[in-house]
Length: 402
Image (tube, rainbow, N blue to C red; front, side, top):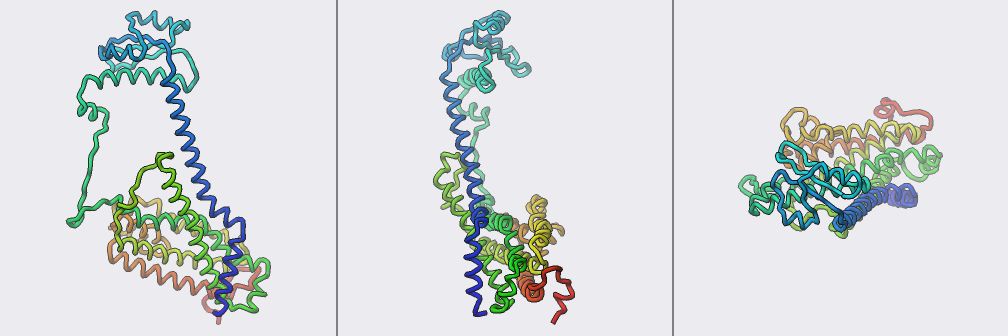
């Protein structure tokens, strides 16, 4: 194993020199930056359009059969009243009046009628906006602030919940443990193919023959696995650091929700549990993908397995509601404890807080055990399949060869 550091350094440097690695690494932050940029430009355009509409003046007449409008507000909007509905509509039709609004006696049962000159598909909305604003402002002026808040459904409430005698906020408790769930999803989605094909490249170009004359098969495959873990960590940092930095710098401009990170509850046990599940799960699927890549002769054949692996990993996402609402069901417990479906259920249930202690211990033990066995099998498969260029290894060769 004295060549392990050499293998790792070679694999890491070689991968870091590939354009595809950096495209994948920066693709995620760039995509989010583009989305947030579009949101920002959209917000700016919306604000500008709203300000322009406020500045626009147009001739307006109203008929108030409801008796709800405030005469002072009607004048404030630059409008005049009329009792002749037909004449007002005719004036709008022939262009001598910009807009006319009719408020029926029973507004609860009948619609407000709005007539106006066409000024474009977007600017036409100013007529309806004025009609509703004039009515709501008139009604609000007749009630006290408490009634106004209730009617507008803007009342505020503060909910405090307790668990075992101490204050407990489930949503805020989920944030820090939930980061490991997001990170696992991102790394597998963006780095899975690299794991699967990491051992087939040398086989396809026959470089493996020269490598194995100086480096043991076990050293080479272990070095590749460690390199993949380090590269995944680098890619994770490339994704997370720009996202966090962008949130801190541009939160207000993008109108993103305000999270006071300093006040987030820190549960060391749940965070440590999430980290353990994340590490064991990542090692398990890294070993599985490397084993598959070692058993097949080409990257194309290895790519055929990626769908099955992704189904095992992300298939449980379709049962998210069950993991949260019925954690005690046999199906949920099976998905939680079966190693190849366990990562998402365990990380999610740990974040929610319904993962029982015995499930945590058994689940992590099974993940670690399977990860260890899978890594050992990956090394064995590579030892016997490194020089197989035209066929897949059989199970007999993998487990019974000497």
